[in-house]
Amino acid sequence: MDHLAPPGPGAGLPAAGPPPPVGQARAWLMAVRPRTLSASLAPVAVGTALAVAQGGFHGGAALAALLGALLIQVGTNLANDVLDFQKGADTAERLGPTRVVASGLLSARAVSLGAAAAFGAALLVGLYLVSRGGLPILVIGLASLACGYLYTGGPHPLAYRGLGDLFVLVFFGLIAVAGTVYVQTGRWSPAALLLGLSVGALSVAILSANNLRDRATDAAAGKRTLIVRLGDGWGRRYFAFTVGLAFALPALMVLLGLWRPGSGGSLGPRVLLLLLALPLARAPLARVRAGAAGRELLPVLGQTARLQLWHAALLCTGLLWEAWSGRGGG
Image (cartoon, rainbow, N blue to C red; front, side, top):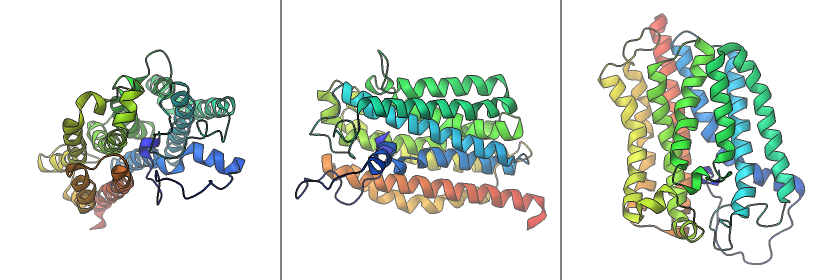
């Protein structure tokens, strides 16, 4: 999903001359979009920190959850590259990172096989997680694989029907955090669901920034994203709402005394350490609020991706600090 990729310097600007030749290895790296993978890392890291706080850390399950999430996202990225090209969404007017099929760097068949391989590997990793979590994890895993394809595939692709935001919130937020906790502790945690909403909200913010950037070209291609449906003004308010939600939910959990790690009570005040990331939200919010459009929105993706990483890192630190403190660490 290129909406999660912070652009590099000059991304989307006209080239000064013919582009340098790209080898096969570089082309595959571009297709995988490694800078998008923080969307998989952040929720698994938060889920693992919460599992530690609840006294149920399991290293093998945490590693498998991370690997499975990364493989599903890689498969989704590759499938998107092929399917968006076939549906006519990747045109010369597109401003995002280079798509390898549309640019002719890799064939549609090769990238399709790569997506199938990534999804297949995720299925194998999932077998271990199913052995720990049983039927609920089997259902979650199969749904994740199916929706990874249906994001841009099938007769009614989610991203083309305004449902891409829901997919990202559920699978890169709710399920990723709560499932990570469950395979380690064996328990479903209300705290994990709320923290999943918090983490997922920033992935949705990155998606909405991407869709604000591509609103005109998406509409022309019949890609009715939620931003296209909302329109420019409400789309910008929506971006601000998702950023605010990511910080408001954990703060409310602390202030209202909801679900203390390890005991079912409230999150401790150290979780509010994540508020130190709030200054990083100022630049992308200001740019979106000022009416930036097209190429002007390219920096917002990188700024919001960095915000997501700092949000997750500080949230993990706060959870682990609470766990250590609650066990007599001071």
